[in-house]
Amino acid sequence: MKYLTSILFIALLGCKNVPQISKQNVETAITKNALKLLEDKRFHSVSIAVLKDGESTMKHFGELTIGKGNKPNDSTLYELASVTKTFTGYVAAKAVLDKKINMEDDIRIYLNGSYPNLEFKGEPIRIKHLITHTSGFPNFPIKSENKEAFFEGLKLIKIETKPGEIYYYSNTAPEVTAYILEKVYQKPFEELVTEFVLKPNKMNQTKFTLTENDRARLVKGYNDKNELMPNFNRTLWGGISGLHSTTPDLVKYMKLQLDQSNLIVKESHKKLYKEGTDFWEGYHWYIIEDNNRLMYRHHGGIYGMQNWFVIYPKKNMGISILTNASFNETGEILEKVVDNLYTDLQVN
Image (spheres, rainbow, N blue to C red):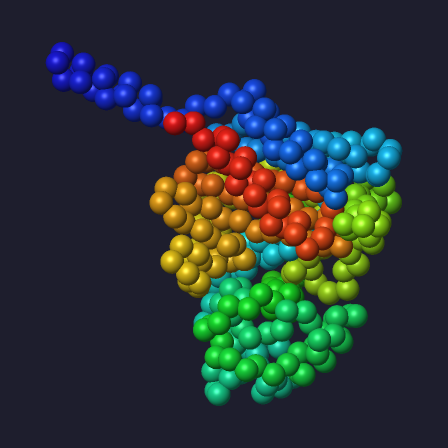
């Protein structure tokens, strides 16, 4: 009896240490941080989603069109910009598990033609270098008007550092990854993302190619001078950008990324390249681990909108924030909103 009492006491003590936060508290924290953001008149709308312990809260603020008062909603389509890269990383992780590719592969075995320029002193660019931004590729493709031109541009690249040694963010490398994935699966990259990520997770409102009805729901964003900006025109595979999504679909994506029983998720969250004491590159995830906080995150920025997508596996939580504004400081400002929201949601 004494033993059972001790077990009960320990169980109750454990329950006391489990963080609890009500949906009302989540809504209050979201509202506080959203309204604070909109005090900066360069921002016009913001959509925030929080998934905590399986329960989602989504709220929308501001106006999509200046002076119209048309608040975003759950069907509003945003461009995900570089958050698309995390989908590329997921498909690449699946390809590794399917033994379609190996992280140590020289990328040239998948390219048609000769690319003697894609090495440094005999050291080739490997698939792991594409995924961790350590390939030595330039940020933007030399040619990007179409896929044929892209490969012409690849032949003009000069690799000036040993692959795998220096981090340099590249929007060229993920397009090569997308092409390689197409080749090994013999399917268009857009189809691979749909088959491996979108359909299994019922992300029916997340897509590369939009219908006429979709375009009516697509956000038109602004720069810091309140000038309307164009939407992104995808000319390549979509490894770097091109996905559009809604707030509810991003909650579904959070659920996927928090599912540690999913072997592809586990693979995609592996720490592949260390940048600092608490900073790693995964499969297009920026992984930060300090003290008790572990997060996988990515920022997306395009002409008229930006977003942050962050997963906190130890807290069983995800945060997404999207806005119809894009200027130099936007990413930094949104990052602070996410950090403040995270702090507000912690219960001692």
